[in-house]
Length: 124
Image 1 (tube, helix red, strand yellow):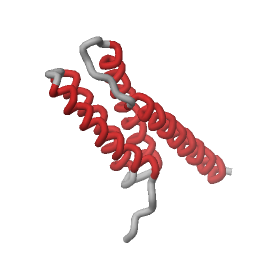
Image 2: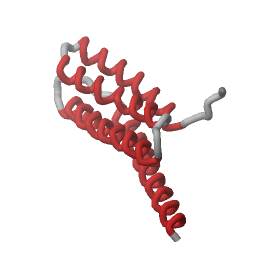
Image 3: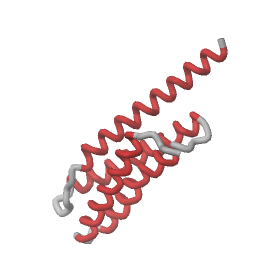
């Protein structure tokens, strides 16, 4: 079966690949602690978005996307550490991450709203 194009899934996969490249740069500079944290958080965003595609319910879908959003927030923290430290390389990942965070927030809000409206309609 052919899978429908999914922009947030595509964005998070591309972001994960870019995180891996940046982590390799950090490791080359022997910044292993931050590299490890960034790798885990940065790739977890896409993993949770991917997992949400097979959610058991709308509530499960929302929950998984909220986890992805939290991982995105953590990733932003580690990228900020790199940006503010004189001995760390920088990247343009924060701009891309901001886009992902905005999209995740909109998906979560609209799914919650749709779920609320559906419940309200069903009760009436």
